[in-house]
Structures are given as C-alpha cells and as structure tokens.
Image (tube, rainbow, N blue to C red; front, top):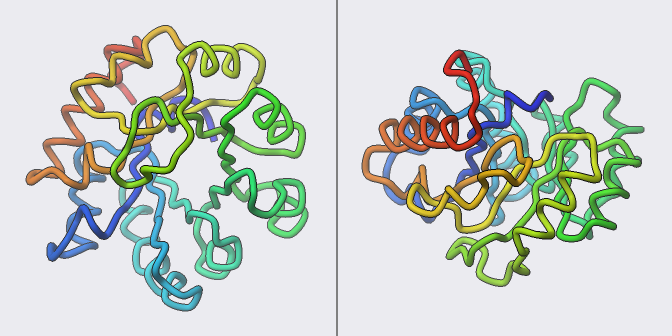
Length: 215
C-alpha cells in the first residue's frame, strides 16, 4: 500500500446509498476515481459480509482498486479481499499479520500519537486518523485537531489518511498536514451523481496535496 493509492479512500454506507443498486453505485464511484474501497456494513453477519465482499472483489479488480473490509478479519480473509481496517479496540495488528501474511493490507485507526506508533510497530500498512469534523455516519467519533494529525504524520513513516466528516467544501483542511489522502463516506456515496462527485473530489484532493494527475 503506497501513498499514491490512498488519495481517495471511499467507505461504503448503506444509509447513503439507500434504495439505489449498491454494486452499480460502487462501480460508479470507482469509475469516478476512487483509489481504495472499504466495505463497511455494520449490520451484516460475517457470512453476509463475505458474500458481499466476494461480489465486490471482481468489480474492484476491474479498476485495480484494493478492497478493504472494515473490522471483520475473518470476512476479509475468507472473501479474498485485499485487506482489513481495524480500530484501536479490535484485534491487534500483529495478530492479524501473523494470521493473514505479509501481502495482506492492514489499516489501523489511530486517534493519538501513541496509537499511531503502536500500530506502525505492529505492522500496519497505513493509518486512518480523525475525526477532523463531525460525521453523521459516525457521530460519536472523538474529534482530532489538525495539530495532532500533523504530529502523527511527522512521527510515523507509513501513509496516513485523514477521515471524519470530510466533504468537497471542507477538504482544504488536509493541506500541509502530511497526509496521503482522504477517506470519505457521504462526500461520495450520498451524492446523487456518485461518479461525478468522486471525480471532482479526487481532482480537488490532488490539487491540495500537489499530486500528479497520472494517479
């Protein structure tokens, strides 16, 4: 997992997609330029999550986009997903690495510098840090200051993705923070035209982070 591949990290949410066709709208997001897709479905059983991830995998492969499963290590491994993202209270990154192997992508949430350093030492490939803003998809998320975000990106060597209520209008907050990209939910999946929303957001992030248009 390199920094360039984390530019626009999209996280699914059934409440945002609503009655629209889930797989069609995910593909629209990938067409628009999403560079990583995280499947986050809190209300599905492990078996249901595996089925959904297996259906998503070939769609993601079509666009050369890694598929990450949120929290559920078993579902991520059994579905053939590219990796998993875990919180600080979930299974230790080192244990996941032991089970899943070196090629498996492991992302970890870090809300403090201490959590970030521990996750890196345990073998995380990237960090998700926030919340920079209040998000309706995760209203109880602990807020993070820009200073803390900068401290984390300065102290760790693995890529960091900013997260938490980020939208097209407020995404400028990540400028000069040292992040590799932004993770969003509603900024892509709550939009009526998901493909266009992803395209516009990716272009803006690219400008903010001064990233080549080849990505």
